[in-house]
Image (cartoon, rainbow, N blue to C red):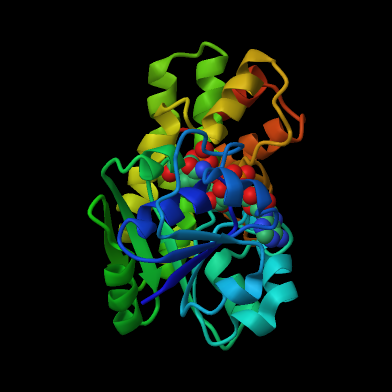
Length: 317
Ligand SMILES: NC(=O)C1=CN([C@@H]2O[C@H](COP(=O)(O)OP(=O)(O)OC[C@H]3O[C@@H](n4cnc5c(N)ncnc54)[C@H](O)[C@@H]3O)[C@@H](O)[C@H]2O)C=CC1
Ligand SMILES: O=C(CO)COP(=O)(O)O
């Protein structure tokens, strides 16, 4: 079954390379020209050559011929992209590969697909994976979420490769929450490390951040167990401990008081604000998310944020 990837950033390109080692793949890029001639994505994934079975196109109509379309654009761009191209995407299996919650609605990618392309089947691919690891063929395990288990099984089979092992779940809300929220906690961990607060502080933030993730999952009727899987615990561990992560690096730069390149995709910054607003509306206690939103908006610095967390009432774990 042919597959296309829509969005040719680091992750879309990496997935296209990996899947093209198994069968034909089309990668849709808004600016396809350079990649078509150089057979690599020099800007996002330098030195990862495209296999011959990977076709790059600037024509979405051509890419949208495939029944399975992986969508790898940044979360806050997803709704506009779907809306603009809804006619081409209708009836397809749309697999969101982005991680985050939308500012203004607090919704994740599966819900947004359902709203914008109601005649499509919505799924999500998420979990611990750096684009360069996938592109280089290093072993990686991810979660495929789709509400319909029969489709989930078919997508799991279609998207598994020799190096990319997929587990599946029908809990799409849990799967998308895991990928979205780990980025917020990674910013907190990076900030603590950047400010020199130490690895014990990072372990505390990671663990209490995980408690927050499960709290929000319960509130949104997701299964807290999903958060203990690859999307959630797995991605939290990866992103909170590696300077390969852009979210972690943004946190580090906040902790060190350095500016950060605004052109880099850092999903956790918008997601912190989206989730903090959702928590405020529903009276949910998400203290780490609240201080990350405050750090992003320059309403707190790392030492005042840490003081807020440490001064909270003592409670049962
Ligand atoms: N880079 C990574 O290691 C991983 C990234 N992801 C997720 O993948 C998503 C994309 O991230 P990256 O590829 O890393 O970002 P990126 O910044 O490398 O690339 C984003 C791409 O989206 C394209 N784009 C933006 N708006 C578009 C639109 N309306 N139509 C078509 N294309 C559009 C841009 O041209 C760019 O090529 C994010 O949600 C991220 O969390 C998930 C796992 C790993
Ligand atoms: O999602 C990722 C790893 O699973 C990539 O993390 P960053 O977006 O923080 O680089």
